[in-house]
Image 1 (cartoon, one colour):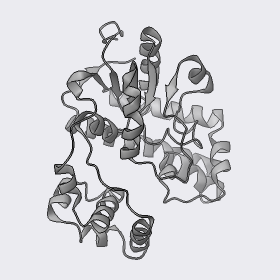
Image 2 (cartoon, helix red, strand yellow):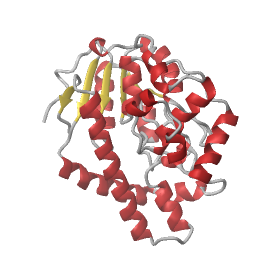
Image 3 (tube, rainbow, N blue to C red):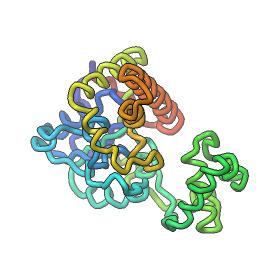
Length: 289
């Protein structure tokens, strides 16, 4: 097991890794050593409605060390990588450790992000209506070839995002990406670490952690979110939320919901590992814990 002795005390520290891999504990140790602010880079830990299900830092942890960009967004809000980048840049003037499992956030920070105008609500509503009526394949068929070659065409959210950009701006997502400005924090200026734990170890840890979430009150957290629940909201993608909603609606047993949530979390971890392999080859592998 590595210690943090070899991690820079001066450069910004970036910690990426799959869900349940111990990123937050590592960030806490580095922040306590160096007097850093812990900055969230996870797309779901920004939502105030989810603390337990997204494994957000506890109230005690947030009181012990300074944290930023956790739980500050309402569940009905659309929170994008672009918004995250705009919020994180002003924090870079102080010692930080930026931690999370959303690879796209780190890519935007270290490689740059296309300055795409916000999608108007009416365009998003049109996309939602078409997906409901025709499915994602209809939107995918209308994308430009360059964009289609660059995105995951099986990922409905990515397809819809690309279609919305094309519809709203008249320019394909690939062209916007080709015009990307310089990064706010080039990787060479940071201590960039990626956790790559053993898969069997991580799978077992994911199961234990979800059981701990249930013991800590995850079901009550989801029950509180039931009024106005919409599976289309980005906040509703918190792993475990749709599964526990199904249980509370009488569509499954608690045991079935538990198994489905654990499976979904393991599949998500696999997608994260794939992203890290393909997009973070220059990051330093770090064994933790």
